Each structure stands twice: as structure tokens, then as C-alpha cells.
Length: 422
Image (cartoon, rainbow, N blue to C red):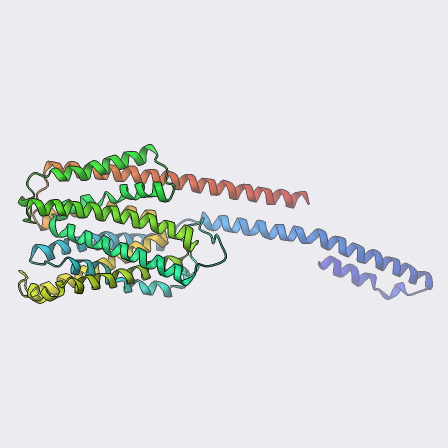
């Protein structure tokens, strides 16, 4: 553009006004200059646009492939510690509550849910405002869902969540914590099962292997010969009830995960930070209100005072057990959400399941639970099934990233050819 400006300035030079012939020549030259200016402008603008596009693509690619810094690794390590410690300690404290005299299943449900406000500060982190949890997540339709539809989604998932937590609480009440945590690992199998019908999940050999191993791992625990030898001291009937409730809770959690994915794809049609946080907060709010309704509607709240007075470790320990159980579930939630936004929901769920085998080891140390041959075999099968599942997800993720990279490279090559051709 600087050359065009210089050409125009030179054409308007006073030396061209010497005669009538010069004037006609000036008019002719002026016309040629205007045509030349128009021709150069139309030639330069596409090149500049293509150059800008190419620069943007290159910048985007360099951003994607930028190596992780120490701060990122520090945050990931912190979130993993939060998730593992929060999950393990909260399960042990939940078992302690029932082991020392606690009897309220609904109170055990409430403490799992009531701490969700600890996630609210995430809304005020500027760097997360426009973040997408999935690089391919896009808005499919410009029209957002209506308020009624959103409320229906939040309420439905919230009610499923509170029912699920109640089943988990019942299972923890009747089962040794080691048995309970091993059965919970089957949630991956149920997640894959429901995803096959709801999310078009393909059953690869690794997924089938994971389903079989996790199923066998849970079934083996049904044949535990002497459950009363553990610290739980429950009858065979209650032990079976605990098994059924925990398996049902694992199935329910797998269903909730699959339905959540359907909600993002079919209803919300986006997976941004705000959309994910809104779903977590409102779903947890509905679930907490449902748990409180269950606590007061069932009449269990009437026996809480007596329960506190008869708690084997004393009143203060009773209150602190419940408080710290709720706080550790909050720590777990912070670690879980942090990993979702720093890496992916798959990674967060994988670390969560990976931490489940830690609990049986801690149960042996703190509750002196016995790790018989059946439990050991069950734990080995659960870990094997978990590894198969995660490795398949890793292969799928790697394939998806390779496909996206090839698409970006093809797009960049096409843009470069257009620039060179013009």
C-alpha cells in the first residue's frame, strides 16, 4: 500500500501541467494509475488475508504443541493428591461413622453432597471463562435451550445423583470398606455398558476384557465366606443388601455419566467451562435438597441426638467425623473438577478409579480388615480391568488427536497452496 501511495503522489506532480497535450497525457496517466491501483489492491488483499489465516493456523498449532510448564505439572500433581486423599479419607471416615455407632443412611448421603459450594470460586477464575473441556466441543445450534429444558436436565440428574449417593451410603453401612471400594470399581464397566446404548460406544476387545474382568471381580465378593469376621459385624442378609446396593450405586453412577454426556451433546450442545460448572452446581444443589428431604421425611433426624450421645468415640468425635467427611468430599470434588479442566474428564475419572485399590490397603491398616484370597484376586482383576479400560480410552484419544492434527496440517497446506498460487 505504501507503493500505491507513492505512485499516486508522483502522478500528481506539477510538471505534468505544461501544455494541453500534457493535460491529456495526465488524464490518461491518471486513469491508468487508478486502474493499476485497483488491480494491485485486489491482488494484495487476498494474499494478506491468506497470510493472516496461515499465521493464525501456525500460531494455533504452536499453542497446541507447546510443552507443559512446571506450573501445570504442579497443579496436576496437587489435583491428583486432592482427589486421591479426599476419596480415600472420606470413605474411611464414612466407614468409621457406621462402625462406631452411626445409623443414618440419609445423613451419610447428605455429607457426600452438601459441600458443593466449595466449587463456586471456580467461577471467578478469568482464565477458565471461555475454556472448553473438549477441543472438539462446539455449539451445534445457535439457539440455547429454554429455561424449562435446563431445569428439567438439572432436576433429573440431581435426583438420580441423590438416589445414587443413598445407595452408596447404604452399601458403606453394611459392607467392609475394602469390599465396598472394590465393587465401586465396577462403575467403569457400567459406564461402558450404558455408553454403548446412549453414546454409541464401540465394544473393542479391550473394553470387553474390562467388562468381563470388572464383572467377575464384583461377583467374587458375593462368595465371601465369612463377612462377619470383618469389622463391619453385620449379618449375611445385610451383607447381601450392601452388595446389591453398592452394585446398584455403581450402575447408577455409570448411567449418570452417560446421561450427562447425552445432555451435553443433545441438550446443552456445548461443553464450555460455564456449561460444565452450571451442571455440576445445579445438579448438586438439587441432590442436596433431595437428601435433606429424605433425612427429614424418613424421620432419621429425630434419632441424631441419641446417635451422637451413644457414639463410641464421644460427641466431639461424632461431629468432627461428619464435618471432616463432608470436607474431604469437597477436597475430592476440587481435585476432580481441577483435573477435568486441566486435562480431561476421562483422566479425572481414571484417577478416581485408580485410587479405589488404595482403600483396601488402608482398611487393613486402620480397621484391621482381613484381605483374604478372594479379595486379593478381586482387587487384581479390578486393577487389570481398569488398565484395559483406560488403555482403550488412551488409544481412542490418541487416534482422535492424530486425526485432528492431520486435518490441521491438510488445512494449512491448502492455505499455503492458495497463497503461492495467487
